[in-house]
Image (cartoon, rainbow, N blue to C red):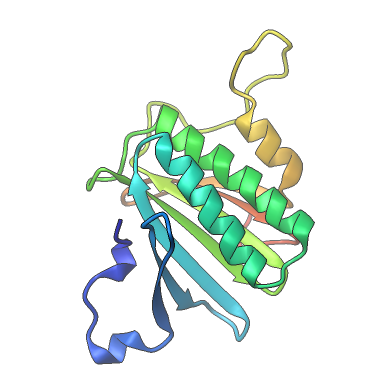
Length: 172
């Protein structure tokens, strides 16, 4: 799957940009973020439940290769899985039929964001109850994240969570 950032590039665009291809066939676009130690990885995946496992694997592989703390990598795996699962289950895909997943690394702070085509409601944690068979995903995200929130952009909803410290955003 090709990231929106993985379009054919002209030579000047190639500065600070790489395409990583993993064994699952995902193409991850990597670019420099703001700041000296900031990296942004982006992948677009089909709006399908099978994408969750592939993305989870890619994030763990990528963050683990950067020598981030094992606990942080595990939390990022859970958060990415929950956010992407929610997008697959409750939202429309983007106009190209995909969902965009980004992870931004700044030192030992990781921000995971999932962009979908929006849904009929704004994502929010389900109320606490023992009878729910589902709906706990954003409560799990909220418990692990330093901050999390939902913003809208021109394409739909962006649900994000920051692990390991504060983000450069304000939580909603």
